[in-house]
Every structure is written in structure tokens, then in C-alpha cells.
Amino acid sequence: MNRTATILTEHVSHSFTTGKIVQPVIKNINLTIFNGEMTLIIGPSGSGKSTLLAILSGLLRPESGEVQVNDTQLTALSRHELERFRLMNCGFVFQGFNLFAAMNALNNVVLPLVYGSKIPKKEAIRRASEALDTVGLSHRKTMHPSELSGGEKQRVAIARALVKDPPLLFADEPTSALDKHNGQTVIDLLHHIAHEKDSTVVAVSHDNRLIDHADRVITIEDGCITDDIRSFPERSC
Image (cartoon, rainbow, N blue to C red; front, side):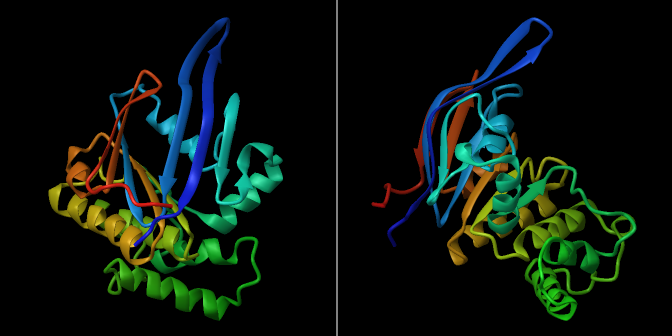
């Protein structure tokens, strides 16, 4: 199957400033990411990998350079337009789960469908229920986050990211707080999403367990890409 280039960066750089100190974090990165693949970005703490993920997903505007996602130039969008783009195109999975404690699993997954959209509540519930079924939590839908294990919370977070059927899925340290069994479950889900849904999945992690399951592993050190390895020959786009 041919892959399509979905994310393209050109000469992207970014720095953080504290007082008079300017710390370059991302340095002149050129990168192309494809759909239907699980792309893993690895590197030591402070290497810039989470900053790069934020730039690729439109959560952070780079100081210089361009980021294009499909036909949209993210760096040309206003703040409101960026928010709209993320709402319509992106799913996010974070290390801290970011679930609402007062809501059960089903309502946590329903939330992205009813926020800023006109999807009928009945349809939103049906889709949320199916998303929880997909991640193996059909028996936990009425449970609140305090009643769920760490692995179950992360799967609720993945279901919430999937419920909009987004073409782009971004995961920041999705397995670092999980044991071996739950971490493997999450890895398998991310891999399945990329291959079966033909989505663009980009994950950042310190967890070496993900490396063997990624289609592509990008290493970043000191804000620069130092290695880029595929598990198969690159497809044409």
C-alpha cells in the first residue's frame, strides 16, 4: 500500500526564553510523516521530542519554519483556526490521562463529540460506547476514573481520542506509567489504529518497548534528528 505524506515540516526551529536566557529546543528540523504508520520519536529527557510533538500537532506554533498537515499550513492559521483544526482532525493521548473525575468512562469519551459540534446526544453515546468496546472496556463504561486501573484509564483516553475517528493521533508518553501487560495493550492499540484505520499515529516515548512495534523510529538529541529508521522500505507517496 502506498503511503501519503500527511505532515511536512520545513526548517522548523523553536526556543524557550527564561529571563535573558534563550534555550534552543528544536533546531532546523525537516521531516515528513506518513499515514498508515506508527511513527515513534525517542530521545533523552530534554532532547526536544515533546516540543516537536506539540509543533507537529498544532499545539505549539514554532518560532520559525513551516508545518503543513495535508493541505493545511498550520503556521499560517490564527489561534482560533488552529483550535478548530485540532478539534476536527486530531486525537490526543497524554501520559496523565486527563480524564474528568466526576464523569464515568462513557461520558469522558462522549465529551469530544458534544463539545463544539452538533452531533445528537444519542449518536454521541453510541459512538462513545463503540470506542470503548474497541479498546476492550465494554464492561467498564459506567466506572469513574477512581475505579479504574492505570491501564484502563489510558484505554479510556485512547477511546476518547478515537471517538471522532481523527486522521491524526498524537500520543505523549502513553505507556510510561503502565506495567508491562497494560503497556503492551496500549502499544498494540496504537499499532492497530495506524494500520487498520490508515491513520497517522505519532508517539513520543522513553519506553523502549515501543521501538519493536513502531513502523518508524526517529531519534532526536539536543533538538536535532540524529537517526531515522524504518522497519520496512519507504513507500512512495
